[in-house]
Length: 157
Image 1 (tube, rainbow, N blue to C red):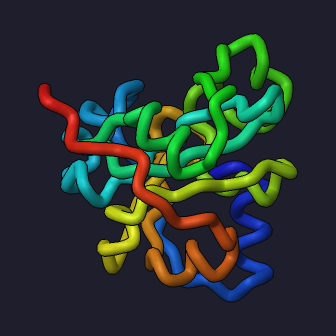
Image 2 (cartoon, rainbow, N blue to C red; image 1 turned 180 degrees about the vertical axis):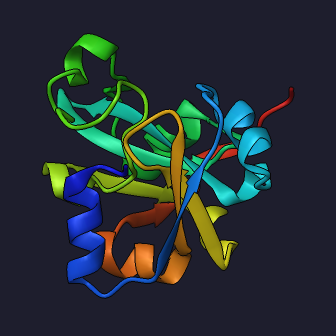
């Protein structure tokens, strides 16, 4: 079942979404294959620290964060990946690494890569490693109000 917090938030905002169950998978590429979703439509969540403050990046599964682009876009030099110990307690109802890209529910800034906004629909982890939520990108943007910028490029597999 999706994170209760997320499901209640979507329901309260009358958002149409679909829950997709898939076999156990941890990497975004495995998840996309398991759920039969194009990697570019699967949004992955990456947690970072900006000057010591936790923030969330949301980008297509087919992309990877370019920290030079990110630092430039943010106008900040002190930006790094957050380690697991730093965010373990921030998402109590989620499995580690399966948090949904709704930083607004966890008092975090959210930055979305502009390439994701080109998609009509996106799917993302729903708090577990066996479930996704699929919804319109437009609803995601309306509810989360992420800052849109360019900070990733296609990952060479």
